[in-house]
Image (tube, rainbow, N blue to C red):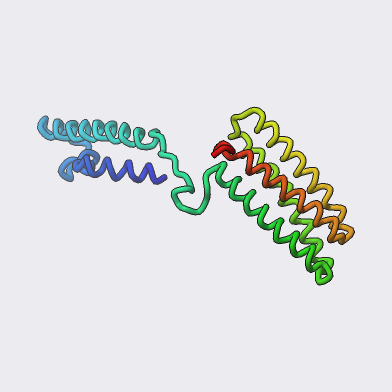
Length: 200
């Protein structure tokens, strides 16, 4: 609808004789034929209108059919590009896991059922971090490192599934052991992403 109104405005602007082209000539009735000069003026103004209409339609179709430049949310500053977003989420999940493990191992006596239920839900987030790690691992080009990264991801997701048992039993010691192993897997995974040789 916007395009049609823009087209109409364009035609009206470039065809100032549009009203004259379709109006009866000089207020006389349409039954009388005007002079040859009047007829040529009417025909010329209609011809001008049609040529302006074709030009406007061509310009409008070029505007409508031209590709729209891509717009990324990255420029808005409210999101990260793919790859960086997954990396950021994995780092956050690891930090949260460390915080949760500290709370469980040091203050489990203060935790109620609702808090244990939240930890159970958090384990799903840790499992999802494994999916983000799979996306990140696609950028590893060394075949040995890629194989090790894939094995770490699978091990992390298996550990998360194993952690559900101590959480459902409210076993702080068991959860602490699993959380410590998971943190070690995160550390191994991040080591695989480093390109700097160990000798340096």
